[in-house]
Length: 344
Image (tube, rainbow, N blue to C red; front, top):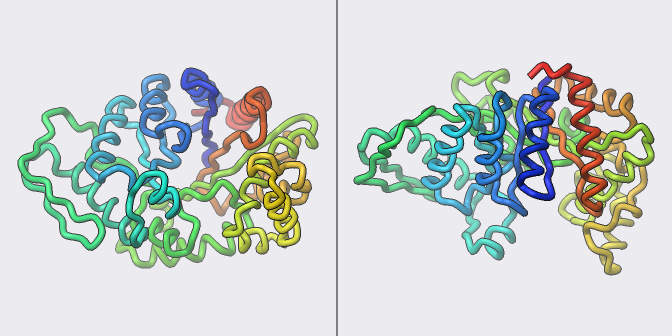
């Protein structure tokens, strides 16, 4: 099982340095998110600052860029990294697309399918000068009179798809090179809710086997010699997601419906979504994050063996001052080094 990392930085320079440290520790991939920074710009910065780890977006928003722009950005970062780029795409939610980015939502599963098709077609044909014309209900492509005059490092860059719901998970398994989970994804949830949908998606793909798909579990990780400190650092992230009613099924699956209701009530009373950690009991943290002392964290990681191919560790940020996130990050990178021996 591959151990990978999502570096954090209060500045882009700090994020780059954290990526270097994670690479030295043995992280096989360093991942960058998209929200408070551009995923593509962050990936480009890491690509020029690392040497061996792959660089992945987890995730870049799929619909806020055209497929051609996404394809071009991926080619550029792949060139910068010497062929180490992984394009992780996700749809985001309807409100984010429509209200924040003024982008139509439509049918996200069908649109993502065509978007991935367009990107791959562009990579394969952009240097030839031939027309790139594809029909489609959601993302038709009409490119004529274009030829990329620069070298293409790879015409097939891996595309990973983030998915939460069953239909998108099936799509990721069918057409993606990898699947990326939500930040909260326990081994039990992976085994009982996700893997059956993965198998259904693989069954629709001709000639594709389970080993052809990289299952990436995203995990908020908090490790400290004082297990209580570790859990309290992770509690803010759990509270943030528990405040959202659409995660009710997820928390109910873990027998945490009552605990989620208490978080929702605190949120409704006026508490900010980033400041609900004190309402979250340790039981919730233990169920959905990897938090505790080093031995506990190793045991929680081991629970994914045989289920996930890759674990993406990220430090907690919600409701924490930068100093706390920084301390959490340093502990995670040290843990990666202890586990891998710097093998990457």
